[in-house]
Amino acid sequence: MNIATLLYQSAMRRPDAPAIGHGDEIAYTYAELAGTASAVGRYLEREHDLRPGDRIALAMNNTPHYLAVLFAAWWTGLIVVPMNPRLHRREFEQLVADSGAALCVTTADLSAPETVPCLDVVELCGAAGEAEDTPPPAVVAPEDPAWLFYTSGTTGRSKGATLTHRNLMAATLSALADLGDAADASLLHLTPMSHAGGLFGIVCVARARTNVLPRDGVVDAATLAEALTAFGPVTFFAVPTILRRLLDPKLLPDELIARVRRIYYGGAPTYVDDLRRVVARFGAQRLWQAFGQGESPCTITHLTPEEHLDLPGDGDLMTVGHARTGVQVEVVGPDGEPLPHGEVGEVVVRGDTVMAGYWRDPEATEATLRRGRLHTGDLGRLDSRGRLTLVDRAKDLIISGGSNIYPREIEESLLSHPAVAEAAVVGRPDAEWGELPVAFLVTTTEVTPDELDAHCLNLLARYKRPRDYHFVSALPRNGYGKVRKTELRTRISPQEGPR
Ligand code: AMP
Image (cartoon, rainbow, N blue to C red):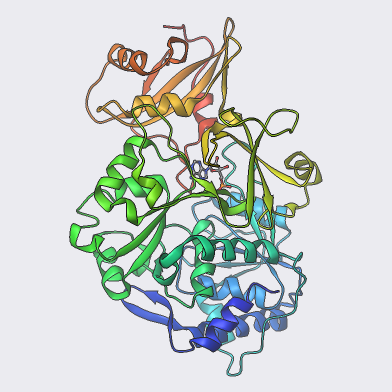
């Protein structure tokens, strides 16, 4: 079934319901959104000669037209390539080349790729108009690709996870099964729709609820207040950096918290110290954590509101919860065999959410999809109740004197020091030990390496303590807020003497 059918059916069921909110206004009703998506799809076929299976790239900031274009592509069987709007023009051009996109839809505020014909989204929607009599979406096979989800490339080249109509449908149904009453609230977009935001957007469309865009795309106190007042109760997805920002009552005052039904968060590790403050401010009943990746879009495990009541102690890791509905999660050793509970291995996933493969990259596909399972590259352990705890990305693991050190554990310990606001630990090559942990820190008050050492030695085995502390004003992050550890590694040289 074509994933666009979800919009078609919602428009039939609730034609006058607000589909897209912008600021405090309604930008599209469901009938208008479906009519526009269908008309844009036909326009692309007619005027640009696009055919089912052709790729169409999106270099767009969040706009009220984003979902219209996303669904327009599917309506006619095109494959959509949403690109992170924070990428550089040259990076857009790389993704356009890799996907073989024939056309790119843009927003005027971005520097558009120069290697492909581009259409401004406002002009496109204007020229296409709105179908009066909306025909159903094209018939596609469940295995037909729908979305090339480019990974954020924190550990290497960005690859296009090929998500089929079946994958998107499975991820949507799983969300509808797992979100409970939150699926019936509006969805406010604070993160790019090219990533998790767009996936949650489909869920919102399936339920015929309102996708809300802050006015002018700005996330500040005024736009938040406006959207929450006009369209509450709302849910929203936040990456941990945004979650931390939202703790500021100047951005989200107490009286507005009542209008937030659920905060979905994830996409990168949330440190226990941050989570403690988030739970205290918003209440466990408002929190839902998702662990996923582009290769099983946003859908591997979840931590329910109730499970947020059980916060671990200093330096301990928080669980990311249990497998999502319709998804099977295992932890396996190097031989691919499941490990006993409590043992750390690679997290592997089975289910209809798992991508078909990497776009035109059989080698990477073969390395990642083995024996019918997605190898996530994440290391974790399961407990006897099926709860997963992630210890780190396999590629970020530090091996020192033959022992595994998980940077995440050290970061958790450092963050429990009151002076430390942000922490990232990477391995520094060392002739004697192989690698030694080194910390990059953003601090709020002055603190010495000796004080940090003493703090870590209170919480961690001696060999895990960082041998160097680099104090920085900010950690390097990619467009989705993830720390770029590859960049941090280039900043340290093996010559720095151990402390
Ligand atoms: P991406 O495909 O760009 O979304 O990156 C996915 C990766 O982000 C995962 O493989 C994890 O390493 C990390 N990640 C996603 N969600 C979480 C989470 N809730 N907790 C910890 N790490 C996460």
